[in-house]
Image 1: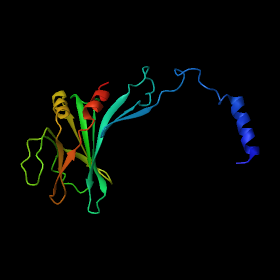
Image 2: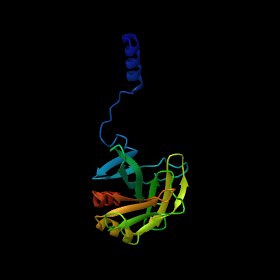
Image 3: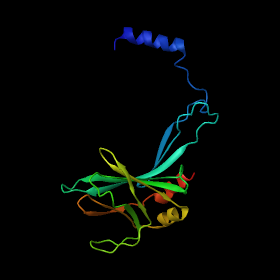
Image 4: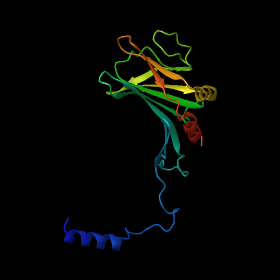
Length: 191
């Protein structure tokens, strides 16, 4: 950019007041989206756009999220699925969503299992919850279910959690879900 272009732009900014600096932090706009990380969990909050005709500003909405990775044949780690939990918009206390890869057996629900033993061909305990598939998009399939406070408490208190889903050809995937930071993320979610 040449000086001829810079100076007219600076003069225009000065004349329009675009260089005005807020006098206090109260004058500064609040962020519309914030993210905080707690171990392997992230809490993301956002403020929806106001609805026309609504007097009160919309309340901030938050959700906590974690990602599950799996080592593939070449030794690299690949994102396999994501999980999110939030407190709004359901009759129960929380909602939970799982995003799985494509090529899953849709009639099989995604199961969240607490205190599952490690190893191959082990019997798994009853799941804390099972979430049915809602739909698939070009890159993923999504499930949704509701959670009670009691289920959320049980999830918070466990250290060994696994997620189970079944691939299209019947292959069972049982993946560990890190609980590192879960309790802190939940506390932030509940404000």
